Length: 281
Image (cartoon, rainbow, N blue to C red):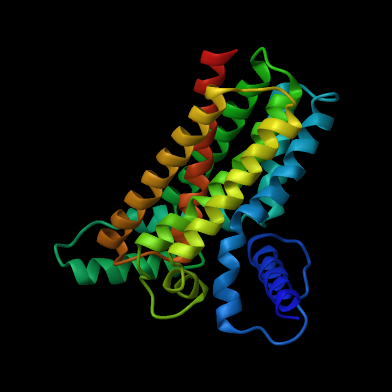
């Protein structure tokens, strides 16, 4: 009975994670507690896996019809639509807020930045940040198609991209603090402990092994192990440093800054695998 209840609680948290981080029309029955909402963040890599499966199979299908350039653009579009542009919106809001010039009064500057971040209108810096991120994604994905590797390799790496980028938000939550006194972001950040980091990391490892062994069906040896440790270490360091940077600029993290971390992490992941492929194949 206790085990079935535990499975039911985990499933509920997974459904909540899908509800918060994607546009999948998930309905959670019954009342939802604050602990269940905050606990949903541990399943961020699983949400990334759902999105990864979507873009991986899309890539396998679209590349047979369109050019690598158009296929790459469509993959980025599909990934963006799968979460309603939620993280791109956070990226734009974060960069608009960072564009606020310092007045010399740290407290006043932080209040101004948080106010700009909460504004529903997007500024020029926000538009530029979205444009650059989307352009870089398209170019890096197109670069994967242009390399002398099989489509299963490309598809598996596309599958892993959102897995790693969603996981990358969790170290920031663990090492950071909330900039606001309320909101969904505060709920996630305040309740992210070492167990959340550990379990989400195990999920990420599991998805990596799945991609490297079962999808590619070929041994990668030390190269695959090295790639995993390099990517995870770089993303963890980026997440940690981002949390500390946000403490200086915003007095903590917000849901928008977490979205920005996720988006930039995708670029870091793609850059990393691009360099790895050039050295390995």
